[in-house]
Image (cartoon, rainbow, N blue to C red; front, top):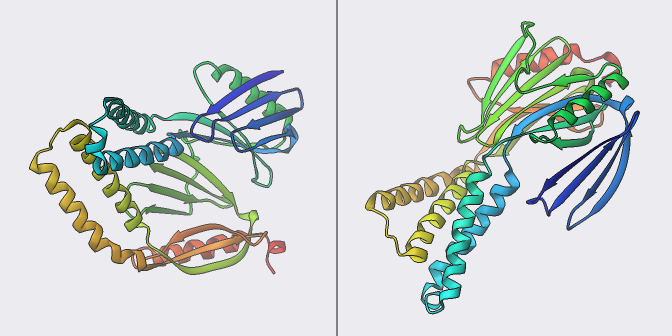
Length: 314
């Protein structure tokens, strides 16, 4: 039996314990909010994938800690300066928030197991202490499961020439998605400032029904987050340590405020999206559509539909 434990302090102190036996695994999860135990057989595993990721939960936690601390220093700085303990506590929280935020972008490997219907089974956070055990676990699972598939961000695409390739960016251009469409499946690779992950969609999962709709633009929300973060950092310096930044930083804040005000209009701008439903009625695949990629995306949708098994279509 191989026992592995992963700890996620910024996910409500989640602790995941996995015990891998000859033919099955027992998974126990425990956090401040829930406890759960379940098991799965290796023969049910259909895919093993990896991802190289930072911690979004950690960055979210540090963002709000920084925002609240900076707000308290800005609004109540006179009262806080009357008590040395409160001042040092606020300064320590501010520094900790910056440190936690910076370290949230440190990436680590995560190994994920899914069943043959693409349902999540469990994930393992790889460290220098358990990497050899993880390799043993993967070997055991692959020996027990037939036709298991593997996908890795280090080499997500086969040497085979794809029929189509589609590259998309998010609203601010910080996330790049590369999708390549082959005869029986599509493979995707997502690269962002928070990490990289790959995915696979087999056409036999799809029903052939097309989703067409319009969705709002998230650029304004992202810019608001950046603006709030910048204000929090500068506010903490000014009112927490009485360090006054140069006019250069003031110009940056003004520029961000102007961009934020202008981009607020984008919040109500809808952008066209197209996708495909799976056999369960969920939108399994979708992408943004614009004037530049519309023709290519329509050809991709038609190609995928032609590769979906006839029994999946109504």
